[in-house]
Length: 229
Image (tube, rainbow, N blue to C red):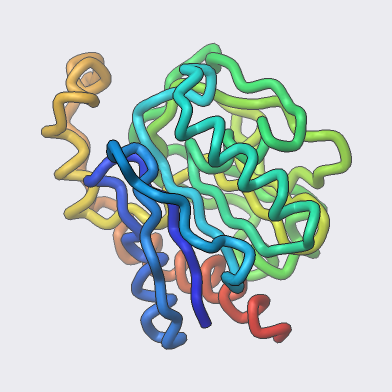
């Protein structure tokens, strides 16, 4: 099984998603279109596409983000499975015609999300609890795309997860982020402004065990769906 993961900065990789894919013996190819001279791989031949996070905005107008938005749009048209995390979810929303904009509050750290009634019946979210604490790092949000199903919400940011059709998922939160990844994010120049605003240092290990469990549930179900199971 061949998958393509779109990165936007070197320090935001697959994390826990990678561990689940490795256990499923999936082959992952990174597409780093943000790098000068990078070429778009043959996405149509992949079993699924993954769009990861990053500190930039969908609204920046970057050529590589416009390219990714077009890739998502075409993938949806041909029924190809797509998974987006944080910026990736915002790219999916934009590709589906929804507005991406600044959220009234930044969510950086550990926040509670609530699964919706629709989420309780969703293949990826059914195994989660009604309320779960997850890691967040975002200042923007998006309108729910027309025809999409809202799967999870929070007090500070209503649109936390959605499904479009049967095979396209957007997650605003970071189930993939390991303690090591969170520590790395905190020392990156791109994130220094956000870090200075925090009232206390981020403890990436605080809910690590539960995040491991949730990642296995959500990403494991997504991976099985690629096999039609």
